Length: 450
Image (cartoon, rainbow, N blue to C red; front, side, top):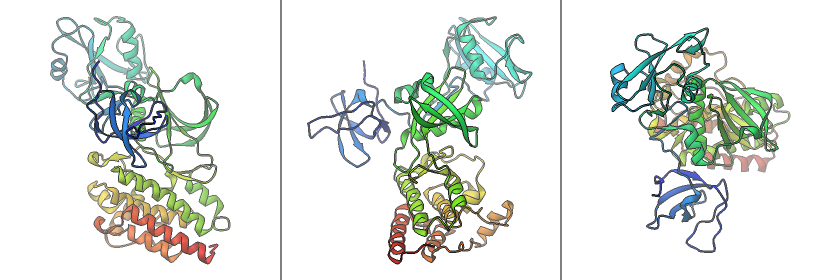
């Protein structure tokens, strides 16, 4: 069997521990992230690099490939969106019994059409809403398209044939297949949901146990919002750092239910933590430590050409031993794919991103400055008493938030450096890290308890 190519500069996770006495090999542990450099002539080996920068040969059977940013993970890879009847028939040509796709209905906006090929033609079935559910024959009803497709895969049940082979949308990869290849698929029977511990943008976050270990789980049954979570999981698969919340696994069930399992962060969000403790408990050194943790994560994202786009204290979580980790990768994108225009968190978004949807590491730097202001104001809402609609205009005119009460002057100077109107004049995360390390050293020397 031919070896599946592992594209250069993509990341993979080791599927088992690899030890070798050869100096030409790269030992790694199960779960360790590796970056592909290139293939060797021997099809059994790749040249790879670990996060510490060490390079060496690794066995190809230990590192299933990750999908690159050119492909799109999809819970519904057979869904083609807004295409016409003729376009659907062209995609299903030549006719093949059981070949199918689903598209948005052109005659009934808001409904769908199942396009199903027989031996010599394509049939189009109207999928309509009834009582808030989807149906073809008004006898069987389904919560979402995934459930409908899974039903007709097992039984034609009035259709010209059962659904046999999906016609995949271009550059689309089925979620279940890719997670399985990446070694991220977990067993639903090993997951025990306990209680709700938070509310995210798309749904509840629950405390759970997986194989006896405490974990956090995002659970979605709506296929549309679950698809948004897929983007988050696909980013998390590629990233591993001590200050990023770690993906542990994914469960994608046949009915479209999606579970994303991550490490459990016992002390909750950074914004809630600093609000509840205040300056009587937290010193400037402690606040600087939190700031450094986040900055180190952003140095890592910067080095891997990822832009977070939603950097804020609400998206920083704290472990039991008060290690801050960046979470919520729902908006995170590879630099080369930043054309998305999702709803933006205005008070944390840079002027150029608000104005022109221009996202970059430098727009993350702006957001980081706002995050610093949140930390050193002990969780206050940015731009207090300023209406949301006025924030962008004021920033363009030069307004900047004043220093929080008790904030060290050097820290406020760092904030202001992040808020340069011209992105080119903003510092890198590496330079921000160095500045904060110097500030922390100075604060420790004077023994401040502010």
